Length: 206
Image 1 (spheres, helix red, strand yellow):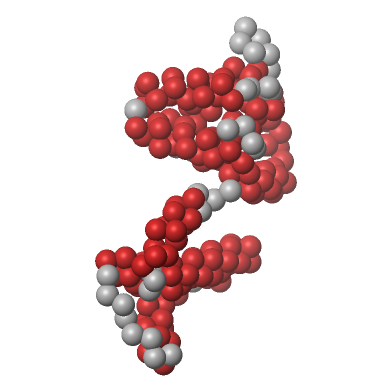
Image 2: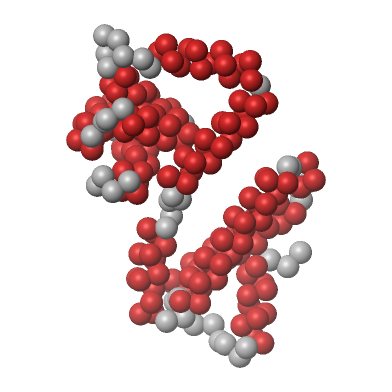
């Protein structure tokens, strides 16, 4: 199988474009070559075992990655573009948290339809746990958000942060809850907390 890197070099050679030496260009080529290796790994899978939605997601992800890497590689031929490209790609490194949460809700609904009795029983537990009591529901959601961050559960982080906001949690309250997490988890807690910051940013709260 021809990797994306080999295909790129062939296209560049046909176009008469010579390789421009430099560390950044080498790094970009390495990324594209790694992408080619990923292509081969996926080719070795039995994609028929995946659902149509999963196959579409794999195809869309690979196409997006391919376009992103090729843009980086093309821009790296001009040294003046390197810093701008890296800065922009750094900001794109994390997917939209709102979109991820919407996908979480969509899949949760599918799960509920597939296992309705189980989901109904689970919802009874959740309603009981997160209702106002000695602790307000908002505080319980902030606590759950920190637990989710501690174990690194992306779906839980998005669900609990969104629920806390829906219950009236402010930016200041969320950040203070994060500070407690950082006191316990240190830098790993900070790394996970960036997902919450991104969600707050997308919601216009920071």
